[in-house]
Length: 211
Image (cartoon, rainbow, N blue to C red):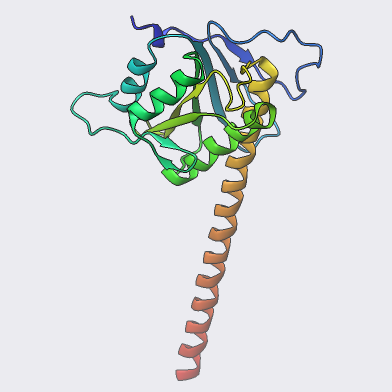
């Protein structure tokens, strides 16, 4: 079995954030956050793992996960990037890297999922500054999900340490973005129904006037 398919350790997410004095150990074997707070109107599964080799294999794998399919786009915050260029950038930062899976349970479009990924990674950038990362969107499941690869050091050379609290905050940012998208959709749908209702009302009024 491939090392990338080993089961991840599940970490329960409660309504209270992890304590400040929580041990600052970084992820080595894998970590994921599930079990959302009851108040949440959006659901996101966020997984992370730290790696120090097989970067090229992993980037190739997430782009060609299924056989006989077109090569998926490797995207950054500002657009697409060539696979070799991205690998060169990560290796320049120190070869070690993190891989994340961000999977909202709500059905989102590609553009909406991109915005969720960017919002989650912005939370990590608040701690370490600008990051070197890229992601690929997979559409082979009911809900689209993204595979993110991030260099183990920021652009200012700070080593990145993804702790349980860091993962919690990244997940919270992703949830907030999904919730915002859902609210915008609901508002747009409400406005559409209102327009339809007004149109029907106007139509009935004209029919009555004709009679």
